[in-house]
Every structure is written in structure tokens, then in C-alpha cells.
Amino acid sequence: MLKKILIANRGEIALRIIRACRELGVKSVAVHSTADADALHVRFADESICIGPPASKLSYLKFDALIAAAEVTRADAIHPGYGFLAENAEFADACIACGLLWIGPPPALMRLMGDKDRARAAMRKAQVPILPGTGLLPGAEEAARQAGEIGYPIIIKATAGGGGRGMKIVRAEGEIANQFHTARREAEAAFGNPEVYLERYLERPRHVEVQVACDDHGGIAILGERECSIQRRHQKLVEEAPSIALTEKQRTRLHDVAHQACQQIGYRNVGTMEFLLDERGRFYFMEMNTRIQVEHTVTEMVTSVDLVREQIQLACGAPLSVRRAFVPRGHAIECRINAEDPVTFAPSPGKITALHLPGGLGVRVDTHIYEQYVVPPHYDSLLAKLIVHAEDREHAIARMRSALGEFVIEGIKSTLGFHRRLFADPDFQAGNMDTGFVARFLEKPRDG
Image 1 (cartoon, rainbow, N blue to C red):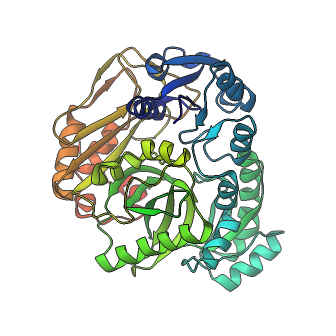
Image 2 (cartoon, helix red, strand yellow):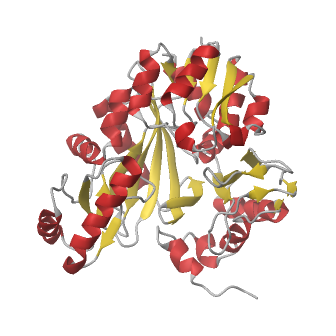
């Protein structure tokens, strides 16, 4: 068993990994930039080490600083969390080359599923439904020709990365050349790879993802699905488990397809397969995230499986501690509380002058903030994840509304106000949602 894990991350996910390490009897090492010297993950880890100045590219994204920190502290392994280098196969290779255990899937699988064009080809081979689309495109002229064959609207996607960067929706032939070049420039700037492809665009799909866990011995566990349709500009704001959009027949089929895909590619460790569900109930593979997800918490609540602990044990070669299929227990919902204006979503860094966290039966808060904490402007704006669990969705919504009413953050702006409005909305309460829901919701007149 491992003796010490270096956590190549910060914020709430670093704290989440520290907790899993403690339960396993493994020492933890926190890394931090100078901006994060007073962060809670630094305080609660067994050891900490500074890796550079505030800018991510000079600290949390710097291979040599992270590996040197692991060597200096005599860590056995590196856990990347999510974001930063979590899906960077080159970093995983570097860790392995230096004798460190990588807590995640093998780099070859990260490369396969991290390249959306190759991932689509792999899913096609596994007979997983995918949307009509193209391979990598050499230029705008070929893009226009193939878009005409697919039929508008289409979406241009970067083959590398995610988060909405390098993605452009095109509804008419006259727009495609300009959008093609814009998408390539964005992809090059964000990921260092300008390659893009086309895919048919679904106007009002739901975003449903499946949590998987696979060991080195052929074991595959499907830990249910999550509903992630509440998002703004491709960034998720609310996640639920299970999805109320699926019939039992659809759920069984979706889980079977995810199992089939994992088997085909020989997946190992924890991962998430993401799908779009159209208005007729047909689902299509979108991408696979080869890491722990921000929203893993709702799956944990309905399955009682510690996914971070499972990650660590699987990386050590242990067999799955869980069976293939799960029947979820109750309903769980997560709200991402960000340091952003609740109306404009503009970032709002600064000092938290007052803080009160909600509690009670079925309420969980994963956070790294505290009173007098200064939210730095250099990183992701996530402040906390508020998670509730109840016997069904109706009671989970009521519990979330109560918890949101108790949550107090002063000194900076946060998205608490947005979530309070959202959970009072009749359409949201009825489950009438798709990936365009938030855009329409924000256009509704506000009371008062």
C-alpha cells in the first residue's frame, strides 16, 4: 500500500483527497502557490510545499516543480484531482518515468479519450451511438462541404480540451467559414492544438453522464448516471443523480452501452462517459473524462461509494470494491457555488468577511473557504459544492432550498442568489430542462 500521496491540485478537491488519504492511513502532501499559502488544504495536509508564484503556469501546471516536490517529500504517488493536469497524458508519463504512481487511468487511455476525434472512432468501433459528424478538417471549404452533407445546425468542436472553448454553433452555410477559423484560433490558444471537427448539433438535448470504475482484473462497475443539463456556456451549475429523464429501459440500455465501451477500450480506474439525450429519448456519446468529476459527490450520496478512495485503491492494483450495477438510493443534487456575480456571472475575488455553512440531515458541503479567507483572482471561481440527499427529487429540492437559505457568504458576490431563484422555478422543479434551460431562465423577469 502507498505511504504518501502528493496532491497536484488546490481548493476543495485537494481537501477531499486529503480526507480519503486519512481514511486509508496514507500521508498527504499539499502543494501550493504563494497565493495559496493560507489555504485550508495546506493546513490540513500532513506536509506542504510551495511550488511557485500565483500564476498557474508557474505553479500548478509546472511539471518539474510538481515532480521535484514529490521527490523532496518522498511521495510514492501523485493524485491530480480535476482540472489543471488531471487529463494531461504527458504529465502522467513524466510521473511514471520518475517512479511515481499515477492515480488515474494509463496515459495511453488518457490520450485516446482526450482526443475527441479518436474517441469517437473508438466508440463507433464499440457500437456506441454517436452523432453524425466528421473527422479532422483541413480547411473551411471542406468543413462547408461536409456540413452540407450532415445538415444544419452543426457544431464545430476542438478535438482537444473542453469547457466550451473551441466550440461554435453554425446554423447556416454563410457562417461556417468565419466560425471555423474562430474555433481553430480558440483551440490553438487554449490547448495548443487547432484541430477541429464537425458534429450534428442537437437544439434541446439533455446532458446525462455515466460514472464508471474499472480495475486491472477485468472488473467493470457502472455506478449510475447523473443529470447535468443545468449549465451556462457549457459550464455545469447543478448536477443530480439519478436523471429523471430516463425510463428504466433507457437507463438499462445506457448503462449497458457504457459497460460495453469500457470493455472495448480496456478502461481502468475511475471515469465518466458523457452523453446527449435528444427529445425522442435517443442518446449519443459526447466525450469521456478520464478523471474524477466535480460532481462525483452526488453519485457518492446515492451509492455510498467513496469514489476518491476507490481511485486510489484501483491505482494500487486492487480489485473493485463494488459490483457492476447499482440501484440508486434516493436522490442527490449538487449546486456549484462560485465567486461570481449572480446576475452577470462576472468573477468576484476578494475577502470573505462572514461565512455560515448550512447543515442538517442529508446536507453536505465540500469547500475550502473560511471567514477572512481571501479568494484569489488567479484560479477557478468555485467556492463550495452544496450537496443534499433525500428519498426523492421533490424532497431533495425542498432540502436544497432550505440549505441555500442558510448559506451565508459576505464580502464578495456569489452565485447563491442564482441558485435560490433557480430552485424556486416551477419548470426546474418539474424537471423540464435541457442544456439551454439556464439561458432561457436568465431572460425571465426577476421578482421585485
